[in-house]
Structures are given as structure tokens and as C-alpha cells.
Image 1 (cartoon, one colour):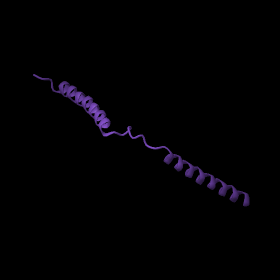
Image 2 (tube, helix red, strand yellow):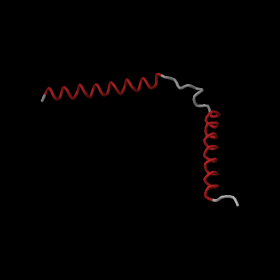
Image 3 (tube, one colour):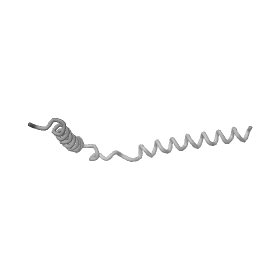
Image 4 (cartoon, helix red, strand yellow):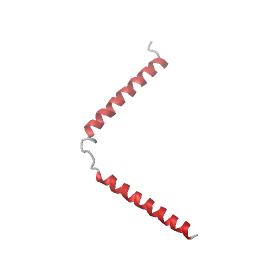
Length: 67
């Protein structure tokens, strides 16, 4: 019984240590300021929108051919 209790306490301490270490590592790396520029995100979103618009037009033309 004592051995199981000690094993449980040691395991719990290990999990807490791991979580604290992981949290500190997440804060250790600064965010790249160039990674989230709004201009770059807008350009990527516009490219996706253009592709999706082309698919919509192609589908519309297949379902309703111009007469």
C-alpha cells in the first residue's frame, strides 16, 4: 500500500514537472513578427477566393450552360 502511494506521488510529480517544463518552453520561443503580416494573409486568402470563384463559375456553367 505504501509503495503504491509513493509510486502515485512520484508519477504525479513527474507529470506536473513535465507540464511546467512544456509551458516554459512554449514561452521561450518568440513569435516571428513576419509570420503573421496581414498583407500576406490577405494575399493568401484572395488566392483561395479566386480558386473557389473559378470552381463556382465552372460548376454553374456545367449545370446551366449559356444559351
